[in-house]
Length: 155
Image 1 (cartoon, one colour):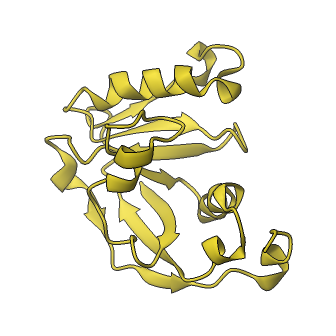
Image 2 (cartoon, one colour):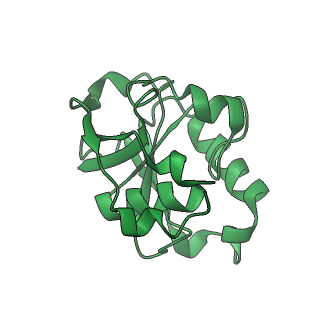
Image 3 (tube, rainbow, N blue to C red):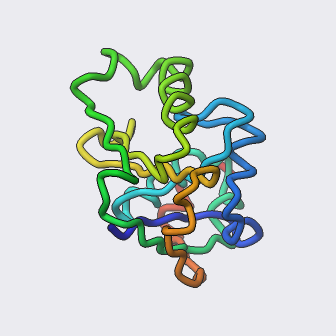
């Protein structure tokens, strides 16, 4: 499966998950490295946009295409029907669940529904997995955000 990551050019080639480890995220508590990606480039853009505080967060970004093996033994698919009702608003719950999955070092990645578009999936990569080397990172390329979208952000 091909997944997509949009990030600052300064950090696009960090495959260690340091940013997520330092600051935590929806699916990982502080202290657990991971790399957030999306199954669709458009969802990756929406995820980046929703977390941007101002226009500068959407400028000087790059696109990373990543090939994740289609192997059910390496990629855990979270069943959204089993998630707690209202999981989108309960970061503690989603971080706890992500911590459980990230602690299993046989799992190279796991898929989760997007809080923005629940019918689409984000894919969380686990750099600590013993199978992480099976994930292929293609060369990053510059990504230009449409100025009309940027105009919707506060400066």
